View 1 (cartoon, rainbow, N blue to C red):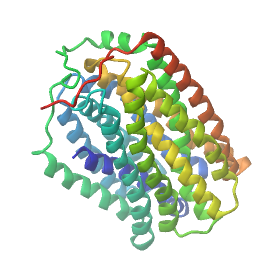
View 2 (view 1 turned 90 degrees about the vertical axis):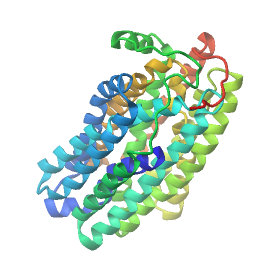
View 3 (view 1 turned 180 degrees about the vertical axis):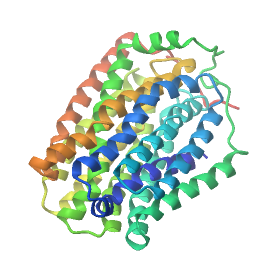
Length: 404
């Protein structure tokens, strides 16, 4: 059920990128304005992450998940009514507000079904919904846009999300907090939760790494459809599909493999999940360079595919890694802070930075330059793994999946 909700979470946010050329021609937008549309979502999503994370540690997570689904779906559908750049900017920002509750709530919920022995695999399986939703949003938004106009893309995805929410209202259940870790969990004051997070050196390093990794991911998700449309003269539907399907299908495989490998490596060393993530970003950096610089469509597809595989290794352990550094009563807050740092500083700046740089350097070289940020992410992950291996994690013992 969470997989289905997450699918629409990413389909809705990806849809706009596939219709960038239509928006640019109909509203006479510059690359900087297009970049601002990508950044508007990330800024609000990031700013709200701290608030959302603190809230889901103190309310029913089912309420946060389904309430967010309704809000972002209605906003997505309402985007079809805007008539200019300002309206688009506001609706993208509001959609970020609707989606900000989902990942802190859902990852906290999953962590109460799965302990150390299976947590990365469970989150890795859930993560495949992100890739499937990105493919669907990229392809079908482009297809609907080129046949019926860009407005109908938002109506279709928003409407389907509302229907899904009504269906899952009865069936989505919530486990007891701390069940998988066999702890009695009490609600902590917010200041104590924040103190627990920020007193962990490994947690801070993980947030920095997520900021860098998310910067690179948002660069490619935002600009690759337009890059393919312009450099290889693809249709909107094919550009949207090609920009997502190779990366996301490979990421599905990488996420499943990364979840399995991280659970195994975590059993041997406390920093095991972070080492798997480091492999992902170091391996992906050369692929990002090739994505931006190649003149061959074949090599572009190869580089996107290999990058997606390494990206999956990292993605499967984003939240599982930081949950190794905090307790169950603080996981929503920690996930919220991850989103705040990663999307405000990383994802929020990426579309706008590339929009500015591309005006003088071109879109391809601008994409390639993002690889340096990946290398920084890898260094931070190695430092986090070293820190947590020295100090240990809060939960050293492996536990079985929770029975709810």
